[in-house]
Amino acid sequence: MSEVRIKAEQRSEFGKGAARRTRRAGQVPGVIYGHGTKPSHVALPGHELMLALKTPNVLLRVDLAGETVLTLPKAIQRDPVRQVLEHVDLVIVRSGEKVTIDVPVAVSGRVSGAIIELVQAAVSVEAEATHIPQSIDLDIEGMEVGQVVRAGDLELPEGTTLAADPDQLVLTLAVPAAEIAEEAAEAAAEGAGEGAAPEEGTPDEG
View 1 (cartoon, rainbow, N blue to C red):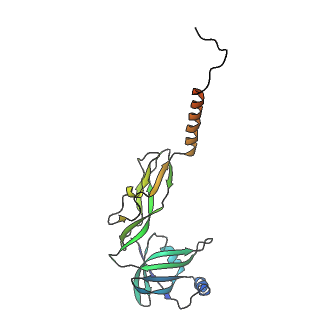
View 2 (view 1 turned 135 degrees about the vertical axis):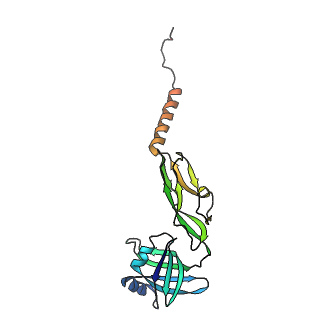
């Protein structure tokens, strides 16, 4: 579990104009809440936050007004074009506390002749807040074309339990479209051959 220490400043101005000024200053507006505490509106250093959020489900130990709180990113807003951070919601967590969170699926291996379709890039699990796995490993080596993997088939890290529907489709090893088309064409040709009538006027052999 990755943990990053980051310093935040209290925000006293709100609204779109204040948020724009915060971002122009190289900071990201955010809010910290949870465990019955009053929400704290903060400004976080943009570059440090961007680097930290490259790690899925990173724990952020936020220093704010002389106190430190342990948080998890709950909602991240980015500019749809530039992909820069616009706002972040951080929820307070405690050591030993169970949280439900989406964890990325990391696929390894290959299956000859199959197209790998990752239907769910992340799966919902329950884990301790300070022991959230960065990924769920899925090794497809040795699997067959046409096979599917559901959430209940995944091998979860120790201390982690599945929160998603066990029947949720995660990955398929699909047959290539060209191969399907070729098989369909062959089947159609065979059907046409079997149903063809003999030509008139052909003398019997013998």
